[in-house]
Length: 407
Image 1 (cartoon, rainbow, N blue to C red):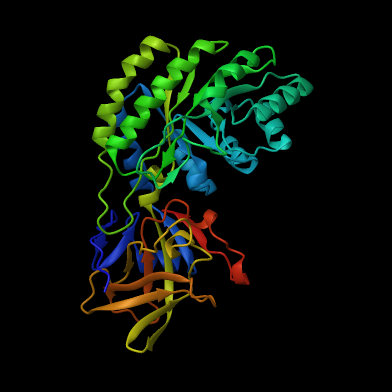
Image 2 (cartoon, rainbow, N blue to C red):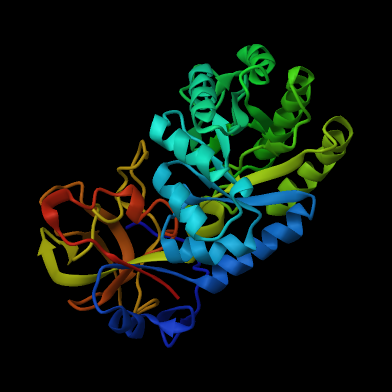
């Protein structure tokens, strides 16, 4: 039996989980159908406030839209942060619709189409260039439009973010321009008619070790200071990425945010001295929204197979691929899961939670200790605010998509 020491950030009243002050059964009735995702405004607001307090006023906080592009959620977050980072033309539209000033939107991604580059230049946002080819295309499209593209160079550093769930820098990578190639490109930007704004250095994600994040931040700042010697104009944006993780599995401890803040504070004087016009940007997605969201599905059937209890639900991997273990896990581990209307429950048991799909991969919880559930009860998957619906194969087997609500 898998035991999970996870303690949810949400309130529990009369043994029912509450989201935004609403008991889960009532919320399910209000939504009108299961499955659904629910995101708690208060938890998001509190997380942003804690980041502001710890990182301090000299650090600009950006939200990475790819973590959760729900329009209402982006609209809610936009006024609380200093910028939005997007990774497609669709996300660019979301950011502009949310009312974010164009110059505070940046666009990253190793493969930008000519149409997306033209959209970005016409909108007046900052393009994070990830290759010499992207720079040449941006220059040609800008000339055709009669506009100077605002650009930052995304750097593939010669170091990585240690202990990160996904390493996005160091060694051969599709992301960014190898650091040793950057000086030559910097010297070409002005003749190409590109408006240089700064650097983007994103070396990894989903990291729970404060020391590793601080080390990568210090190395990123030192690298930017060295590269600035060849820049055609002062560095005005220094985006040192994010990488702040959240705990998903037993034994994982929350990120010591205060230690990250203290380490970054030590490096800020170097930025002020070497890059006096640069705004230091931290780009976060999962850390802002991940713990504020849940996925909810309903038990359709309780089935016993050779002494093992299976709870068959109307949700599954087609809605929440990462919880099924099929979104980057090497060895499958259970996300924190509970029976949302019986958080403690008078009777406990070992149960496996599966969805309705005809594949053994459709697994939301494997032999977890849960309250005894019956048909009609509500299963909750926590830590579901990031890389949930938009990262899942919703068309698989043609089941209807889940709803999303901001509470």
